[in-house]
Length: 252
Image (cartoon, rainbow, N blue to C red; front, side):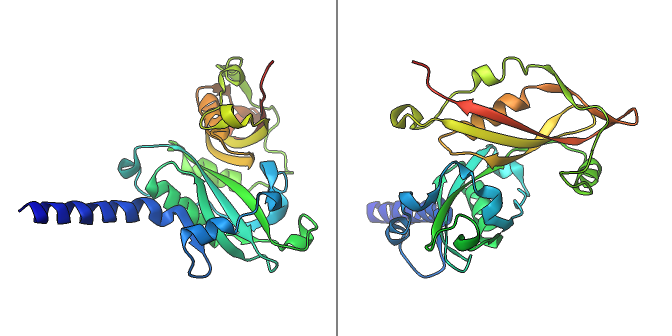
């Protein structure tokens, strides 16, 4: 009986281990997680995602089909190694939120298309970029979002810009680091691009610049607490896209 119980515990532990560690890394070749980790060179990294738009040709963030199974929100961090042909050679989750979200984020990266390094950051070797992929459950009108997708960023979406009316004056002041940032003394800026629907509700976040350490998650949480006066076009409320920078610095 005792041996049967021990065996059952081992089996359950292995299953849990596979669920937890399964989506943590990807390699185009059959390699161990240690081998994948050794492929990432900090000196090759695209720091603070300043070349994010230049490196990615196309990437769709795959949706979460059942939030009731996840019951958690946050930003998944993934380091991606891109080879000389612009192909994803390896990827590794560096900031985990939930096994299901980690797996969906990894699938999103695996399906993305990238540019070769010689036409992005002018180097003659593989490059590493850090992707921060947000997953938040937002109650949005899909018909409004379809309107947004018909617009390009350089087109005028509104006559009168949206205006924050609740919570914004406090939001930047309440953003704080999480994780190991207090030890590593990381500083820098991030940029959050998000939608504001015709009722002034923010959501559908996209991180166009970031560096991890929980900074993006804190910024999004601050934005979600705000309320906006919606943008208008020809006198009618319309959804729109907004980009806001956040700075994370230590004060001495």
